[in-house]
Amino acid sequence: MTPQKTILQRTWTVAPALLPLTAITGCLRVPSFNIAGSFFPDWILCFVVGIFVAILAHGLFVHLKIEREIRPPVLIYPCIALSSAVTLWLLLFS
Image (cartoon, rainbow, N blue to C red; front, side):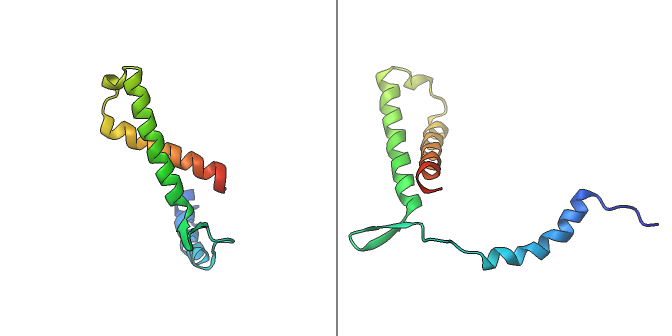
């Protein structure tokens, strides 16, 4: 009698069989928009808007005089930009 395989062992057995499925799948529509005849991916728009939201958040923090409390700013502001961009992506394009 052979011992039963654990869930992790079964997952590693099945995963390589499912990997080719990712190669044959594709987008139903191209996630891009047209600006003056050039097509730009939607994530660029979300990224730019996220950066502007982080800039506005910085201005708000300075106005409220809590900017000194934001530590470390090199981590906080990119997180604000990323969360804004991802939220916008989910609201507009999913």
